[in-house]
Image 1 (cartoon, one colour):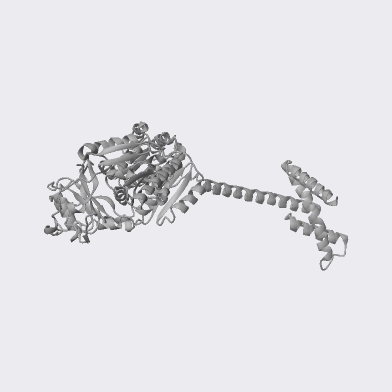
Image 2 (cartoon, rainbow, N blue to C red):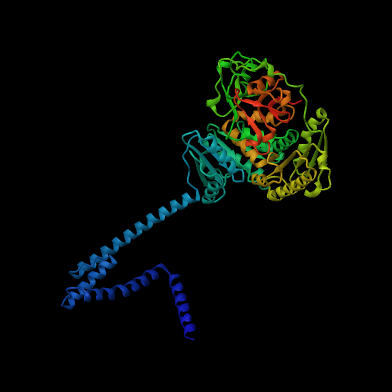
Length: 605
Protein backbone atom coordinates (compact mmCIF):
# COMPACT_ATOMS: atom_id res chain seq x y z
CA UNK A 1 0.00 0.00 0.00
CA UNK A 2 2.78 2.41 0.95
CA UNK A 3 4.62 1.55 -2.29
CA UNK A 4 1.56 2.46 -4.34
CA UNK A 5 1.11 5.72 -2.40
CA UNK A 6 4.78 6.64 -2.93
CA UNK A 7 4.52 5.91 -6.62
CA UNK A 8 1.40 8.08 -6.86
CA UNK A 9 3.19 10.99 -5.15
CA UNK A 10 6.17 10.68 -7.52
CA UNK A 11 3.84 10.61 -10.49
CA UNK A 12 2.05 13.77 -9.32
CA UNK A 13 5.34 15.55 -8.65
CA UNK A 14 6.61 14.70 -12.15
CA UNK A 15 3.33 15.89 -13.63
CA UNK A 16 3.53 19.15 -11.67
CA UNK A 17 7.15 19.68 -12.74
CA UNK A 18 6.31 19.05 -16.42
CA UNK A 19 3.48 21.56 -16.27
CA UNK A 20 5.76 24.09 -14.58
CA UNK A 21 8.37 23.78 -17.34
CA UNK A 22 5.65 24.25 -19.95
CA UNK A 23 4.75 27.73 -18.59
CA UNK A 24 6.01 31.10 -19.80
CA UNK A 25 9.62 32.25 -19.60
CA UNK A 26 8.80 34.87 -16.90
CA UNK A 27 7.17 32.20 -14.72
CA UNK A 28 10.19 29.91 -15.17
CA UNK A 29 12.59 32.72 -14.20
CA UNK A 30 10.56 33.62 -11.11
CA UNK A 31 10.19 30.01 -10.03
CA UNK A 32 13.86 29.23 -10.51
CA UNK A 33 14.82 32.40 -8.61
CA UNK A 34 12.64 31.45 -5.63
CA UNK A 35 13.97 27.89 -5.67
CA UNK A 36 17.53 29.18 -5.77
CA UNK A 37 16.95 31.60 -2.89
CA UNK A 38 15.28 28.86 -0.88
CA UNK A 39 18.51 26.88 -1.11
CA UNK A 40 21.14 29.64 -1.07
CA UNK A 41 19.85 31.76 1.89
CA UNK A 42 19.65 28.91 4.45
CA UNK A 43 23.00 27.58 3.28
CA UNK A 44 24.55 31.05 3.59
CA UNK A 45 23.14 31.45 7.17
CA UNK A 46 24.59 28.08 8.11
CA UNK A 47 27.92 29.04 6.53
CA UNK A 48 28.09 32.25 8.61
CA UNK A 49 27.16 30.49 11.84
CA UNK A 50 29.76 27.76 11.45
CA UNK A 51 32.44 30.13 10.25
CA UNK A 52 35.25 31.58 12.36
CA UNK A 53 34.94 34.20 13.71
CA UNK A 54 31.14 34.47 13.92
CA UNK A 55 29.89 38.10 13.89
CA UNK A 56 28.62 39.06 17.34
CA UNK A 57 25.86 41.42 16.25
CA UNK A 58 22.72 40.68 14.25
CA UNK A 59 23.64 43.39 11.78
CA UNK A 60 27.07 41.84 11.25
CA UNK A 61 25.57 38.41 10.79
CA UNK A 62 23.04 39.77 8.28
CA UNK A 63 25.83 41.53 6.37
CA UNK A 64 27.86 38.31 6.29
CA UNK A 65 24.85 36.32 5.05
CA UNK A 66 24.21 38.98 2.37
CA UNK A 67 27.84 38.86 1.24
CA UNK A 68 27.67 35.05 0.96
CA UNK A 69 24.42 35.18 -1.01
CA UNK A 70 25.81 37.87 -3.33
CA UNK A 71 29.02 35.93 -3.97
CA UNK A 72 27.06 32.75 -4.70
CA UNK A 73 24.54 34.36 -7.04
CA UNK A 74 27.12 36.72 -8.57
CA UNK A 75 25.08 39.83 -7.63
CA UNK A 76 27.84 41.72 -5.84
CA UNK A 77 27.08 41.29 -2.13
CA UNK A 78 28.34 44.81 -1.37
CA UNK A 79 27.43 46.35 2.02
CA UNK A 80 26.94 49.97 2.89
CA UNK A 81 24.22 52.54 2.37
CA UNK A 82 20.90 51.18 1.02
CA UNK A 83 21.25 53.12 -2.23
CA UNK A 84 24.77 51.77 -2.72
CA UNK A 85 23.58 48.18 -2.15
CA UNK A 86 20.64 48.61 -4.56
CA UNK A 87 22.89 50.07 -7.28
CA UNK A 88 25.47 47.29 -6.84
CA UNK A 89 22.74 44.67 -7.21
CA UNK A 90 21.38 46.46 -10.29
CA UNK A 91 24.83 46.58 -11.90
CA UNK A 92 25.43 42.94 -11.05
CA UNK A 93 22.09 41.97 -12.63
CA UNK A 94 22.88 43.99 -15.78
CA UNK A 95 26.31 42.35 -16.00
CA UNK A 96 24.76 38.91 -15.47
CA UNK A 97 22.14 39.58 -18.15
CA UNK A 98 24.74 40.86 -20.62
CA UNK A 99 27.17 37.99 -20.05
CA UNK A 100 24.39 35.41 -20.22
CA UNK A 101 23.06 36.91 -23.45
CA UNK A 102 26.54 37.10 -24.96
CA UNK A 103 27.28 33.48 -24.06
CA UNK A 104 23.91 32.45 -25.45
CA UNK A 105 24.51 34.29 -28.73
CA UNK A 106 28.00 32.83 -29.11
CA UNK A 107 26.79 29.33 -28.23
CA UNK A 108 23.84 29.56 -30.62
CA UNK A 109 26.05 30.86 -33.43
CA UNK A 110 28.62 28.13 -32.92
CA UNK A 111 25.91 25.48 -32.75
CA UNK A 112 24.33 26.80 -35.94
CA UNK A 113 27.70 26.83 -37.70
CA UNK A 114 28.53 23.31 -36.51
CA UNK A 115 25.07 22.17 -37.58
CA UNK A 116 25.56 23.83 -40.96
CA UNK A 117 28.89 22.10 -41.42
CA UNK A 118 27.45 18.75 -40.31
CA UNK A 119 24.54 19.20 -42.71
CA UNK A 120 26.96 20.06 -45.52
CA UNK A 121 25.44 23.40 -46.49
CA UNK A 122 28.54 25.59 -46.70
CA UNK A 123 30.20 26.55 -50.00
CA UNK A 124 33.58 25.09 -50.81
CA UNK A 125 36.42 27.19 -52.27
CA UNK A 126 38.53 24.98 -54.53
CA UNK A 127 40.22 25.18 -57.91
CA UNK A 128 40.61 22.39 -60.50
CA UNK A 129 38.79 19.86 -58.36
CA UNK A 130 36.46 17.06 -59.45
CA UNK A 131 32.75 17.41 -58.71
CA UNK A 132 30.56 14.31 -58.36
CA UNK A 133 26.80 14.96 -58.46
CA UNK A 134 24.27 12.40 -57.27
CA UNK A 135 24.37 9.23 -55.21
CA UNK A 136 24.23 5.57 -56.23
CA UNK A 137 26.39 2.47 -55.91
CA UNK A 138 28.56 3.99 -58.65
CA UNK A 139 29.86 6.65 -56.27
CA UNK A 140 32.23 4.24 -54.53
CA UNK A 141 34.15 2.98 -57.60
CA UNK A 142 34.21 6.54 -58.99
CA UNK A 143 35.79 7.98 -55.83
CA UNK A 144 38.11 4.99 -55.50
CA UNK A 145 39.38 5.45 -59.06
CA UNK A 146 39.80 9.20 -58.59
CA UNK A 147 41.85 8.52 -55.46
CA UNK A 148 44.08 6.15 -57.44
CA UNK A 149 44.40 8.62 -60.32
CA UNK A 150 45.42 11.37 -57.88
CA UNK A 151 47.91 9.22 -55.95
CA UNK A 152 50.90 11.01 -57.46
CA UNK A 153 49.50 14.51 -56.92
CA UNK A 154 50.37 16.51 -53.86
CA UNK A 155 46.82 17.68 -53.21
CA UNK A 156 43.55 16.85 -54.91
CA UNK A 157 39.91 17.38 -53.96
CA UNK A 158 36.73 15.52 -54.84
CA UNK A 159 33.52 17.40 -53.99
CA UNK A 160 30.39 15.24 -53.68
CA UNK A 161 26.88 16.70 -53.69
CA UNK A 162 23.91 14.41 -53.07
CA UNK A 163 20.51 14.57 -51.33
CA UNK A 164 21.70 12.57 -48.34
CA UNK A 165 22.99 13.26 -44.85
CA UNK A 166 26.60 14.48 -44.94
CA UNK A 167 27.78 12.38 -42.01
CA UNK A 168 26.14 9.28 -43.46
CA UNK A 169 27.86 9.83 -46.81
CA UNK A 170 31.23 10.30 -45.16
CA UNK A 171 30.81 7.13 -43.09
CA UNK A 172 29.86 5.02 -46.12
CA UNK A 173 32.75 6.37 -48.18
CA UNK A 174 35.17 5.64 -45.35
CA UNK A 175 33.79 2.10 -45.04
CA UNK A 176 33.70 1.17 -48.74
CA UNK A 177 36.55 3.26 -50.17
CA UNK A 178 38.93 3.39 -47.21
CA UNK A 179 41.90 5.73 -46.97
CA UNK A 180 41.93 8.42 -49.65
CA UNK A 181 45.63 9.30 -49.44
CA UNK A 182 46.41 12.72 -50.87
CA UNK A 183 42.84 13.16 -52.11
CA UNK A 184 40.42 15.03 -49.87
CA UNK A 185 36.76 14.06 -50.26
CA UNK A 186 34.36 16.87 -49.32
CA UNK A 187 30.66 16.01 -48.97
CA UNK A 188 27.81 18.47 -49.29
CA UNK A 189 24.15 17.70 -48.73
CA UNK A 190 21.45 18.93 -51.08
CA UNK A 191 19.73 18.38 -54.41
CA UNK A 192 22.00 18.69 -57.48
CA UNK A 193 19.00 19.82 -59.52
CA UNK A 194 18.74 23.06 -57.50
CA UNK A 195 21.16 25.69 -58.92
CA UNK A 196 21.44 27.48 -55.56
CA UNK A 197 22.46 24.22 -53.86
CA UNK A 198 24.67 23.12 -56.75
CA UNK A 199 26.76 26.29 -56.37
CA UNK A 200 28.00 24.96 -52.99
CA UNK A 201 30.49 22.65 -54.75
CA UNK A 202 31.85 25.43 -57.03
CA UNK A 203 31.37 23.67 -60.40
CA UNK A 204 32.46 26.83 -62.24
CA UNK A 205 36.04 26.35 -60.95
CA UNK A 206 36.13 22.55 -61.30
CA UNK A 207 38.27 20.61 -63.74
CA UNK A 208 35.64 17.89 -64.23
CA UNK A 209 32.03 17.20 -63.29
CA UNK A 210 30.65 13.65 -63.11
CA UNK A 211 26.85 13.28 -63.01
CA UNK A 212 25.64 9.97 -61.58
CA UNK A 213 22.23 8.47 -62.15
CA UNK A 214 20.32 7.75 -58.90
CA UNK A 215 19.43 4.35 -60.30
CA UNK A 216 15.65 4.57 -59.80
CA UNK A 217 12.94 4.86 -62.46
CA UNK A 218 13.39 8.65 -62.48
CA UNK A 219 17.17 8.41 -62.76
CA UNK A 220 17.54 9.61 -66.37
CA UNK A 221 15.22 12.56 -65.80
CA UNK A 222 17.23 13.51 -62.73
CA UNK A 223 20.42 13.42 -64.81
CA UNK A 224 18.91 15.78 -67.41
CA UNK A 225 17.69 18.19 -64.70
CA UNK A 226 21.11 18.11 -63.04
CA UNK A 227 22.81 18.96 -66.34
CA UNK A 228 20.40 21.86 -66.85
CA UNK A 229 21.09 23.13 -63.32
CA UNK A 230 24.82 22.82 -64.00
CA UNK A 231 24.46 24.99 -67.08
CA UNK A 232 22.55 27.59 -65.08
CA UNK A 233 25.30 27.75 -62.44
CA UNK A 234 28.34 27.67 -64.71
CA UNK A 235 26.98 30.09 -67.32
CA UNK A 236 29.76 31.55 -69.46
CA UNK A 237 32.57 30.37 -67.18
CA UNK A 238 35.27 28.16 -68.74
CA UNK A 239 33.62 24.80 -69.24
CA UNK A 240 34.79 21.86 -67.15
CA UNK A 241 34.78 18.33 -68.52
CA UNK A 242 31.23 17.11 -67.98
CA UNK A 243 30.55 13.36 -68.02
CA UNK A 244 27.10 11.84 -67.46
CA UNK A 245 25.34 8.57 -68.18
CA UNK A 246 21.72 7.61 -68.92
CA UNK A 247 20.13 4.18 -69.18
CA UNK A 248 17.28 4.61 -71.64
CA UNK A 249 18.02 5.72 -75.23
CA UNK A 250 14.88 7.88 -75.15
CA UNK A 251 16.62 10.29 -72.76
CA UNK A 252 20.04 10.24 -74.40
CA UNK A 253 19.39 13.08 -76.86
CA UNK A 254 17.96 15.36 -74.16
CA UNK A 255 20.94 14.65 -71.92
CA UNK A 256 23.40 15.41 -74.75
CA UNK A 257 21.71 18.74 -75.42
CA UNK A 258 21.67 19.61 -71.71
CA UNK A 259 25.35 18.69 -71.30
CA UNK A 260 26.39 21.16 -73.99
CA UNK A 261 29.01 20.87 -76.73
CA UNK A 262 31.82 19.83 -74.38
CA UNK A 263 29.81 17.28 -72.43
CA UNK A 264 29.99 13.51 -72.78
CA UNK A 265 26.86 11.45 -72.15
CA UNK A 266 27.24 7.67 -72.09
CA UNK A 267 24.46 5.32 -73.12
CA UNK A 268 24.65 2.67 -70.39
CA UNK A 269 22.45 0.08 -72.10
CA UNK A 270 24.22 0.39 -75.47
CA UNK A 271 27.72 0.13 -73.97
CA UNK A 272 26.72 -2.82 -71.76
CA UNK A 273 25.12 -4.63 -74.72
CA UNK A 274 28.20 -4.10 -76.90
CA UNK A 275 30.55 -5.42 -74.25
CA UNK A 276 28.35 -8.43 -73.51
CA UNK A 277 28.28 -9.31 -77.21
CA UNK A 278 32.05 -8.91 -77.53
CA UNK A 279 32.79 -10.93 -74.39
CA UNK A 280 30.55 -13.74 -75.63
CA UNK A 281 32.85 -14.00 -78.65
CA UNK A 282 36.15 -13.40 -76.85
CA UNK A 283 36.71 -15.25 -73.55
CA UNK A 284 38.57 -13.04 -71.09
CA UNK A 285 37.76 -9.77 -72.85
CA UNK A 286 35.99 -8.30 -69.81
CA UNK A 287 39.14 -8.81 -67.76
CA UNK A 288 41.20 -6.93 -70.35
CA UNK A 289 38.74 -4.04 -70.38
CA UNK A 290 38.77 -3.83 -66.59
CA UNK A 291 42.57 -3.82 -66.62
CA UNK A 292 42.56 -0.90 -69.07
CA UNK A 293 39.76 1.07 -67.43
CA UNK A 294 40.92 1.16 -63.83
CA UNK A 295 43.81 3.38 -62.74
CA UNK A 296 45.55 0.68 -60.70
CA UNK A 297 47.55 -0.71 -63.64
CA UNK A 298 48.08 0.50 -67.17
CA UNK A 299 45.61 2.69 -69.00
CA UNK A 300 45.31 4.74 -72.18
CA UNK A 301 47.45 7.85 -72.43
CA UNK A 302 47.68 10.40 -75.22
CA UNK A 303 51.09 12.04 -75.63
CA UNK A 304 52.75 14.42 -78.06
CA UNK A 305 56.09 13.00 -79.17
CA UNK A 306 58.04 15.19 -81.65
CA UNK A 307 60.75 12.52 -81.89
CA UNK A 308 58.35 10.30 -83.85
CA UNK A 309 57.49 12.94 -86.45
CA UNK A 310 58.29 11.56 -89.90
CA UNK A 311 58.46 7.95 -88.70
CA UNK A 312 55.89 5.35 -89.67
CA UNK A 313 53.30 3.88 -87.34
CA UNK A 314 55.01 0.50 -87.71
CA UNK A 315 58.22 1.99 -86.34
CA UNK A 316 56.32 3.60 -83.46
CA UNK A 317 55.01 0.18 -82.39
CA UNK A 318 58.56 -0.79 -81.40
CA UNK A 319 59.74 2.64 -80.21
CA UNK A 320 58.61 2.31 -76.57
CA UNK A 321 60.26 -0.18 -74.23
CA UNK A 322 57.58 0.08 -71.52
CA UNK A 323 54.51 1.22 -73.46
CA UNK A 324 52.27 -0.24 -76.17
CA UNK A 325 51.26 2.03 -79.06
CA UNK A 326 47.69 1.46 -80.27
CA UNK A 327 46.96 4.40 -82.57
CA UNK A 328 47.12 8.09 -83.39
CA UNK A 329 44.98 11.05 -82.40
CA UNK A 330 44.39 13.41 -85.30
CA UNK A 331 44.40 17.23 -84.87
CA UNK A 332 40.58 17.31 -85.12
CA UNK A 333 40.29 14.95 -82.13
CA UNK A 334 39.43 11.82 -84.15
CA UNK A 335 41.29 8.68 -83.09
CA UNK A 336 42.93 6.52 -85.74
CA UNK A 337 43.33 3.21 -83.92
CA UNK A 338 45.65 0.65 -85.42
CA UNK A 339 46.31 2.49 -88.70
CA UNK A 340 48.34 0.80 -91.46
CA UNK A 341 52.00 0.30 -90.55
CA UNK A 342 53.10 2.57 -93.43
CA UNK A 343 51.17 5.56 -92.02
CA UNK A 344 53.56 8.47 -91.53
CA UNK A 345 53.22 10.35 -88.25
CA UNK A 346 52.87 14.12 -88.72
CA UNK A 347 53.93 16.85 -86.33
CA UNK A 348 50.30 17.47 -85.36
CA UNK A 349 49.51 13.85 -84.52
CA UNK A 350 49.50 12.60 -80.97
CA UNK A 351 50.37 9.06 -79.95
CA UNK A 352 47.73 6.87 -78.28
CA UNK A 353 49.42 4.32 -76.09
CA UNK A 354 48.90 2.04 -73.11
CA UNK A 355 51.29 2.72 -70.29
CA UNK A 356 51.46 2.88 -66.52
CA UNK A 357 52.01 6.64 -66.25
CA UNK A 358 53.68 9.51 -68.06
CA UNK A 359 57.11 8.56 -66.71
CA UNK A 360 57.01 5.20 -68.55
CA UNK A 361 56.07 6.75 -71.92
CA UNK A 362 59.70 7.20 -72.96
CA UNK A 363 60.49 6.89 -76.66
CA UNK A 364 63.74 5.26 -77.80
CA UNK A 365 66.09 6.76 -80.39
CA UNK A 366 65.62 3.81 -82.71
CA UNK A 367 62.98 1.04 -82.98
CA UNK A 368 63.72 -1.79 -80.56
CA UNK A 369 65.28 -4.96 -82.02
CA UNK A 370 63.36 -8.21 -82.45
CA UNK A 371 64.08 -11.76 -83.56
CA UNK A 372 62.87 -12.13 -87.14
CA UNK A 373 62.91 -15.92 -86.92
CA UNK A 374 60.17 -15.74 -84.24
CA UNK A 375 57.79 -13.86 -86.56
CA UNK A 376 56.47 -16.99 -88.21
CA UNK A 377 52.99 -17.46 -86.75
CA UNK A 378 50.33 -19.67 -88.30
CA UNK A 379 47.72 -18.37 -90.71
CA UNK A 380 45.07 -16.22 -88.98
CA UNK A 381 41.83 -17.95 -88.10
CA UNK A 382 38.72 -16.53 -86.52
CA UNK A 383 37.93 -18.21 -83.22
CA UNK A 384 34.48 -16.81 -82.59
CA UNK A 385 31.83 -19.21 -81.24
CA UNK A 386 29.73 -21.16 -83.74
CA UNK A 387 26.75 -21.70 -81.42
CA UNK A 388 25.68 -19.22 -78.75
CA UNK A 389 22.92 -19.44 -76.16
CA UNK A 390 21.19 -16.42 -74.66
CA UNK A 391 19.49 -17.16 -71.31
CA UNK A 392 17.12 -14.55 -69.89
CA UNK A 393 15.63 -11.38 -71.27
CA UNK A 394 15.65 -7.66 -70.47
CA UNK A 395 15.58 -4.40 -72.36
CA UNK A 396 19.22 -4.81 -73.44
CA UNK A 397 18.60 -8.19 -75.09
CA UNK A 398 17.54 -6.72 -78.49
CA UNK A 399 20.69 -4.57 -78.49
CA UNK A 400 22.84 -7.63 -77.75
CA UNK A 401 21.19 -9.60 -80.56
CA UNK A 402 21.74 -6.68 -82.93
CA UNK A 403 25.44 -6.61 -82.04
CA UNK A 404 25.80 -10.39 -82.43
CA UNK A 405 24.05 -10.31 -85.81
CA UNK A 406 26.81 -8.04 -87.10
CA UNK A 407 29.24 -10.91 -86.61
CA UNK A 408 26.93 -13.74 -87.69
CA UNK A 409 27.55 -13.47 -91.44
CA UNK A 410 31.35 -13.55 -91.17
CA UNK A 411 31.45 -16.24 -88.50
CA UNK A 412 28.50 -18.41 -89.57
CA UNK A 413 27.39 -18.19 -85.95
CA UNK A 414 24.07 -19.41 -84.63
CA UNK A 415 22.27 -17.80 -81.72
CA UNK A 416 19.59 -19.63 -79.72
CA UNK A 417 17.31 -17.71 -77.34
CA UNK A 418 15.81 -19.07 -74.13
CA UNK A 419 13.79 -16.38 -72.36
CA UNK A 420 12.54 -18.37 -69.37
CA UNK A 421 13.54 -17.97 -65.75
CA UNK A 422 16.66 -19.22 -63.97
CA UNK A 423 15.59 -22.85 -64.35
CA UNK A 424 15.32 -22.55 -68.14
CA UNK A 425 18.85 -23.93 -68.46
CA UNK A 426 17.78 -27.09 -66.62
CA UNK A 427 17.22 -29.81 -69.19
CA UNK A 428 19.00 -27.98 -72.00
CA UNK A 429 22.10 -29.44 -73.59
CA UNK A 430 24.10 -26.33 -72.63
CA UNK A 431 27.41 -28.11 -73.29
CA UNK A 432 26.55 -28.19 -77.00
CA UNK A 433 27.06 -24.42 -77.11
CA UNK A 434 30.38 -22.64 -77.51
CA UNK A 435 29.26 -19.60 -75.53
CA UNK A 436 26.44 -18.82 -73.08
CA UNK A 437 25.18 -15.33 -72.20
CA UNK A 438 23.18 -14.98 -68.98
CA UNK A 439 21.06 -11.84 -68.55
CA UNK A 440 19.24 -10.49 -65.53
CA UNK A 441 15.48 -10.43 -65.70
CA UNK A 442 15.28 -6.75 -64.74
CA UNK A 443 17.17 -3.64 -65.75
CA UNK A 444 20.53 -3.48 -64.00
CA UNK A 445 20.64 -0.60 -61.57
CA UNK A 446 16.88 -0.43 -61.06
CA UNK A 447 15.05 -0.87 -57.77
CA UNK A 448 14.89 -4.62 -58.59
CA UNK A 449 18.63 -4.95 -59.16
CA UNK A 450 18.98 -7.41 -56.27
CA UNK A 451 16.31 -9.66 -57.80
CA UNK A 452 17.99 -9.36 -61.20
CA UNK A 453 21.33 -10.54 -59.82
CA UNK A 454 19.68 -13.35 -57.89
CA UNK A 455 18.15 -14.70 -61.11
CA UNK A 456 21.59 -14.61 -62.75
CA UNK A 457 23.23 -16.38 -59.79
CA UNK A 458 20.53 -19.05 -59.78
CA UNK A 459 21.04 -19.65 -63.50
CA UNK A 460 24.79 -19.91 -62.95
CA UNK A 461 24.17 -22.60 -60.33
CA UNK A 462 22.38 -24.72 -62.93
CA UNK A 463 25.19 -24.15 -65.43
CA UNK A 464 27.83 -25.13 -62.90
CA UNK A 465 25.91 -28.33 -62.11
CA UNK A 466 25.90 -29.16 -65.83
CA UNK A 467 29.66 -28.49 -66.01
CA UNK A 468 30.39 -30.80 -63.09
CA UNK A 469 28.16 -33.56 -64.42
CA UNK A 470 29.93 -33.54 -67.80
CA UNK A 471 33.41 -32.67 -66.57
CA UNK A 472 33.57 -29.95 -69.20
CA UNK A 473 33.81 -26.16 -68.74
CA UNK A 474 31.62 -23.58 -70.44
CA UNK A 475 32.46 -20.12 -71.71
CA UNK A 476 29.91 -18.03 -69.81
CA UNK A 477 29.34 -14.28 -70.00
CA UNK A 478 27.06 -13.06 -67.20
CA UNK A 479 25.52 -9.66 -66.60
CA UNK A 480 25.44 -8.42 -62.99
CA UNK A 481 24.35 -5.19 -61.31
CA UNK A 482 26.28 -5.39 -58.04
CA UNK A 483 30.03 -5.90 -58.16
CA UNK A 484 29.86 -7.74 -54.81
CA UNK A 485 27.82 -10.50 -56.44
CA UNK A 486 30.74 -11.27 -58.73
CA UNK A 487 32.68 -12.47 -55.68
CA UNK A 488 30.05 -15.09 -54.84
CA UNK A 489 29.09 -16.11 -58.37
CA UNK A 490 29.24 -19.92 -58.68
CA UNK A 491 31.56 -20.03 -61.70
CA UNK A 492 35.30 -20.05 -62.26
CA UNK A 493 37.11 -16.80 -61.31
CA UNK A 494 38.07 -16.19 -64.95
CA UNK A 495 34.45 -16.11 -66.15
CA UNK A 496 33.45 -12.94 -68.00
CA UNK A 497 31.24 -10.88 -65.70
CA UNK A 498 29.96 -7.60 -67.08
CA UNK A 499 29.00 -5.43 -64.10
CA UNK A 500 27.29 -2.51 -65.80
CA UNK A 501 27.50 -0.13 -62.82
CA UNK A 502 31.21 -0.68 -62.28
CA UNK A 503 31.98 -0.62 -66.01
CA UNK A 504 30.27 2.74 -66.50
CA UNK A 505 31.87 4.12 -63.33
CA UNK A 506 35.36 3.25 -64.59
CA UNK A 507 34.58 4.62 -68.03
CA UNK A 508 33.20 7.91 -66.67
CA UNK A 509 36.26 8.37 -64.46
CA UNK A 510 38.66 7.72 -67.33
CA UNK A 511 36.91 10.27 -69.54
CA UNK A 512 36.74 12.85 -66.74
CA UNK A 513 40.52 12.58 -66.31
CA UNK A 514 41.23 12.55 -70.06
CA UNK A 515 38.27 13.71 -72.21
CA UNK A 516 40.08 12.84 -75.45
CA UNK A 517 39.71 9.12 -74.70
CA UNK A 518 35.91 9.28 -75.12
CA UNK A 519 36.03 8.78 -78.91
CA UNK A 520 38.63 6.06 -78.46
CA UNK A 521 36.39 4.00 -76.15
CA UNK A 522 33.43 4.59 -78.45
CA UNK A 523 35.26 2.86 -81.29
CA UNK A 524 36.54 0.01 -79.14
CA UNK A 525 33.02 -0.82 -77.95
CA UNK A 526 31.38 -0.63 -81.41
CA UNK A 527 31.12 -3.48 -83.90
CA UNK A 528 32.67 -2.71 -87.28
CA UNK A 529 35.56 -0.61 -86.00
CA UNK A 530 38.75 -1.53 -84.23
CA UNK A 531 38.37 -3.72 -81.17
CA UNK A 532 40.42 -5.64 -78.66
CA UNK A 533 40.97 -9.17 -79.90
CA UNK A 534 42.27 -12.26 -78.08
CA UNK A 535 43.67 -14.62 -80.71
CA UNK A 536 45.62 -17.89 -80.52
CA UNK A 537 49.30 -17.40 -79.80
CA UNK A 538 50.11 -19.66 -82.76
CA UNK A 539 48.98 -16.85 -85.06
CA UNK A 540 51.92 -14.75 -83.85
CA UNK A 541 54.93 -16.82 -82.71
CA UNK A 542 56.00 -20.47 -82.57
CA UNK A 543 54.34 -22.12 -79.57
CA UNK A 544 56.56 -23.69 -76.97
CA UNK A 545 59.48 -21.43 -77.83
CA UNK A 546 60.76 -18.64 -75.60
CA UNK A 547 60.36 -15.27 -77.29
CA UNK A 548 60.60 -11.63 -76.27
CA UNK A 549 57.43 -9.57 -76.18
CA UNK A 550 59.01 -7.36 -78.86
CA UNK A 551 58.87 -10.42 -81.16
CA UNK A 552 55.13 -10.76 -80.53
CA UNK A 553 54.60 -7.04 -81.28
CA UNK A 554 56.59 -7.34 -84.51
CA UNK A 555 54.54 -10.36 -85.56
CA UNK A 556 51.31 -8.48 -84.87
CA UNK A 557 52.60 -5.54 -86.92
CA UNK A 558 53.14 -7.91 -89.84
CA UNK A 559 49.45 -8.86 -89.65
CA UNK A 560 48.18 -5.29 -89.27
CA UNK A 561 47.55 -5.58 -85.51
CA UNK A 562 48.74 -3.54 -82.53
CA UNK A 563 49.69 -6.07 -79.84
CA UNK A 564 49.18 -4.94 -76.22
CA UNK A 565 49.69 -8.13 -74.19
CA UNK A 566 48.87 -11.80 -73.77
CA UNK A 567 46.94 -14.25 -71.59
CA UNK A 568 48.36 -17.44 -70.13
CA UNK A 569 45.77 -20.20 -70.04
CA UNK A 570 47.44 -21.98 -67.11
CA UNK A 571 46.84 -18.90 -64.93
CA UNK A 572 43.37 -18.03 -66.25
CA UNK A 573 41.57 -19.24 -63.11
CA UNK A 574 44.04 -18.76 -60.30
CA UNK A 575 46.97 -16.65 -61.47
CA UNK A 576 47.43 -12.91 -60.97
CA UNK A 577 44.84 -10.96 -62.97
CA UNK A 578 43.54 -14.31 -64.30
CA UNK A 579 46.54 -14.74 -66.59
CA UNK A 580 46.07 -11.34 -68.25
CA UNK A 581 49.33 -9.47 -68.86
CA UNK A 582 48.80 -6.03 -70.40
CA UNK A 583 51.75 -3.89 -71.52
CA UNK A 584 54.67 -6.11 -70.51
CA UNK A 585 58.16 -4.76 -71.20
CA UNK A 586 59.37 -5.34 -74.74
CA UNK A 587 62.39 -7.22 -73.40
CA UNK A 588 60.23 -9.53 -71.24
CA UNK A 589 60.51 -13.13 -72.37
CA UNK A 590 57.68 -15.66 -72.34
CA UNK A 591 56.82 -19.14 -73.63
CA UNK A 592 53.36 -19.21 -75.21
CA UNK A 593 51.44 -22.46 -75.65
CA UNK A 594 48.61 -23.65 -77.87
CA UNK A 595 45.96 -22.59 -75.33
CA UNK A 596 47.47 -19.15 -74.70
CA UNK A 597 46.21 -16.04 -76.44
CA UNK A 598 47.68 -12.75 -77.62
CA UNK A 599 45.81 -9.49 -76.95
CA UNK A 600 45.81 -7.00 -79.81
CA UNK A 601 43.89 -4.03 -81.20
CA UNK A 602 42.66 -4.93 -84.68
CA UNK A 603 39.85 -4.22 -87.09
CA UNK A 604 36.82 -6.49 -87.03
CA UNK A 605 37.03 -9.30 -89.53
